[in-house]
Structure formats: C-alpha cells, structure tokens
Amino acid sequence: MSLKDKKLGIIGTGKMGSALIKGICDSGIIAPSNVYASDVYDPGLEKMRTDIGINVSNDNNFTVVNSDVILLAVKPQILKSVLKSIRDKVTSEKLVISIAAGVPLQEIAKELVPETRIIRVMPNIAATVSAAASAVCPGAAASMEDAELALEIFSSVGSAIIVQEKLMDAVTGLSGSGPAYIFPVIEAMADGGVYEGLDRDSALVLAAQTVLGAAKMALEFHAHPGELKDMVTSPAGTTIRGIKELEERGVRAAFMNAVIASAKRSRELGE
Image (cartoon, rainbow, N blue to C red; front, side, top):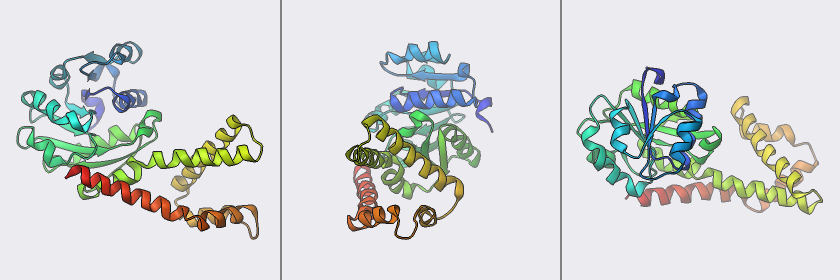
C-alpha cells in the first residue's frame, strides 16, 4: 500500500499540521491535489492552497468524506469534540491517525464506531524542518499495511519507528520533549564561545552545526556514542578537559532525569 494511491486529510493546521502537510507534499509521496486540510479558523489555509495546491475547507466533515486517511493534528483538549463531530463520516474504509499527545488509542476508539482502524503517532517539533523523530503505534483494528502507511507518512518528515503503546510515555519524554532539552545546550555552548571572544551569530552557527553533525554521526556510523566520543578525545587534550567538567557537573544524570520526569508527567496527563 502506498500513499500515492490514497487521498489524505489533515484536520488541524497549526504548526505541526502545516509542517506535516508541507513535508509530505515536498517529499513527493502524494500529489497536493489529493490532500485535504481543514481547520475551524486558520488564515494560513488559503496560503497553503495557493502555495502548495492542496484542497482546504473550514468543514472537518468535508475533509473526512474526501479522504482515505485522516490525520488528526489537533490539541489533546479538543480531540474528543472533533472526533464526535466526524464520527458519522468515518467509515470502516478509512484510516484514522492521531498525533494528539497523551491520548491513548482506547480513548480515541470510544468516540468512533467499533473496529475503526486507528493509529497513534508521537512526532516532534522537528517536523517543521523535515527532521522529526516519530513513534507509530497501531491500534487493534489496524493492519500491518496501515502501520506501514503511517511509517511512510512520517518518514517523509524525518525518521519513524513502530513501538508498543505502553512505551509512548517514554517516547514523549525522550523525543517528544527532547528538542527543548537541546536548545538550551546550543545556547549554552554559544554562550561559552561568546565568553571566549566569538561574536554571537558565529557562536550560534558553530554550536548548532556541532549538535547537528554529532547527531548525524550517531545515526549514520551505527556506533556506540561512547566510541564516537573517543574519536574526538585525545590523551590530556582539550576535549577530555571539557568532558571532565561535564561529568563533575552531573550533565549526564540531568539529561536522564529530564527524560524520566517528562515521561512521568506524560503518564499523569493520560490518567
């Protein structure tokens, strides 16, 4: 099954919804003419229609009726009301994908007809630059083909993996919230560069590119991070001096605790 053979609907065109629309269309996995998007009120709808060539409407049911796959990119607090409003239009032939953080598959299924094919996905904000890390969790009625279709969609804006739903809180703590952990790191590294005499713009470019390069090495070399660290660390050199400082300040434990705390909060919100 390929998205090229389907019509895709996106309900909710905020930052994440619009990023997904742009990334999916730019990737070429679907023609913009086969994409439908709706929002209760969004001045950006017309811009997407003009710039990308998708179909837009303020009527969610219009999107559902015209789509084979419906991607729900709305805030968790309004997901229930959106599901109620489209329930009668979601037939057994349609696949529903939700990216609403913290809302379990069971809660989504309650608002739709029995045996609706549902998939839950946790992407992150890096979808705005087509570098998202997404976790895909198929519901009981979803087939392997449905899961593969979801992987195709979210792989078009980054990387995507399949996980069990019991691990979605861990995903939220790690990749969902993760970009927010890294932005202060980039800022702090740049501050260090400024302290040592670099101008702000240069320091930010060097810090951000360093983080990007390190991440790319971790993904492409398929080596343990410790091994990659050793590639940069020479005896009695500059890097080991910096690493010693990080260890003494408890940076490693702080990052672990950030992921754990965020995952715990995700579980609390889902209760």
